[in-house]
Amino acid sequence: MNLIKKVNIGFLKISFFSILMFSLLSFSSKASDNLPGRPDDRTKVKTGSASFYANFFVGRKTANGEIFSQEKLTCASNVYPLGTWLRVTHAKNGKSVIVKVNDRMHPRMKRVVDLSKLAAKELGMIAAGVVQVKVESLGKKKPKASM
Image 1 (cartoon, helix red, strand yellow):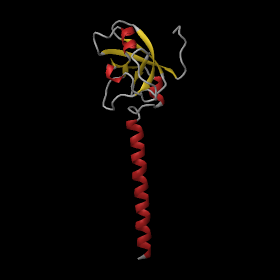
Image 2 (image 1 turned 30 degrees about the horizontal axis):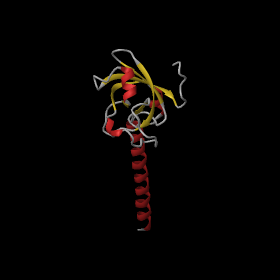
Image 3 (image 1 turned 180 degrees about the horizontal axis):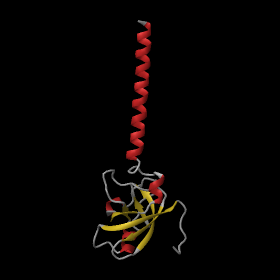
Image 4 (image 1 turned 60 degrees about the vertical axis):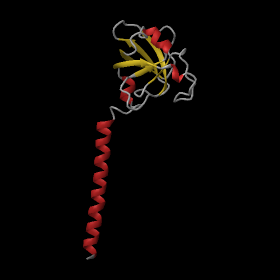
């Protein structure tokens, strides 16, 4: 009887361990593409849609603690880490702007970036509201003005 209990307990430990390992491995291989801040997200060029902030958010705190202003070159993104500098290029007219990620969007938002109004003006997207863009990560260091 004692031997049967030991075997059953040992089997349960192995089963629990294998289920735990399987779930960890399957989570890391399937979901890593969609989680913000992964190393592969920082190096890839992303394409998708971009919009700009409503005036409702002016004066409110952003995710990194800054006060939001429409007159700064900033953006919100769920894809890139806070503090990352991005080059956002309008797909149709080729205009680009360099912005800093200082906020997050709603988790269900499928857009790549949500720009400040100043950044949207520089891209020429105010009238359209939502446009297709190419987004390149420039890293955490502020890029030189000549870029």
